[in-house]
Image 1: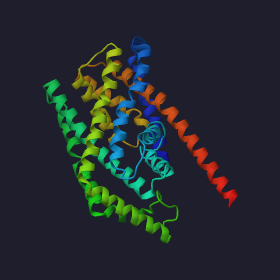
Image 2 (image 1 turned 45 degrees about the horizontal axis):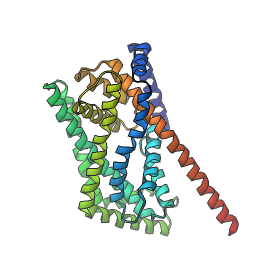
Image 3 (image 1 turned 45 degrees about the vertical axis):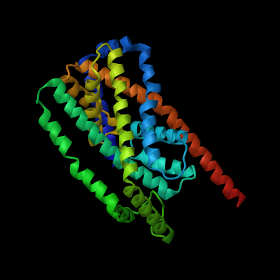
Image 4 (image 1 turned 90 degrees about the vertical axis):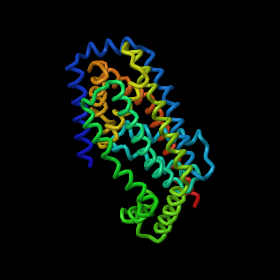
Length: 329
């Protein structure tokens, strides 16, 4: 897996460099210079869709939790998945540990993250469907729609399988076979089996709370749609404004590509290819698509680095507390 990540990372960087050189670094720099300091406004703007995601996550946690704490954890989760070579999953493991530090039981924390991941897939699927419908409406053409429709229909069996696993409790048996390292480093011990049982109960409880699942999905979808403001504003500042439906189309299909090729660290190359492909259908030049991608990556870095620093600070304090308790005992 490490070799796969490293290879994907290297390939993604090569793709970006080739695209920049091919389109002309000067032309792309001119576009970014035209937008100037206004691109920095994308950083605080990102708090809005992230907050909507957090509210959706909060719905899945039966215990009392503070939105501010969940927002910090969500920021760290996103930063890890977007900036580190962890295949978009490492942030979820860290999120569970951080939530447990807030006094939430391991089973509740783990079940909320697992179910949220499934709901996020469902929300992304609906978002992708909305993007396809808008693309067909905007272009009035079925050119290239065949491939996109295949991508749209393809995940249906996977989504159905995920919901069946949650509802039937089969997920519990899968976690047990995998060792459930998220809960205990020694899964063969009796205590670990007890934790797995608690996790199964917590997941079943969430799976039966249909109103919470529906509400969580709606909040996730609202976050995805609101996030399109980043694309809309960035293109406006770059001097190539598009309509809000076009921004939704760009964002939804590009996000679907990043999720499909999840093993590409930070979506390097994937995001650029998605923006170029959909941008072409919407009349955007390749240089504009690359400039938009670079603006988005700038926002990810500036928003994510403080979150990563906060994660390290929390981890340091947690380790110091453990050492202190051990010395006292």
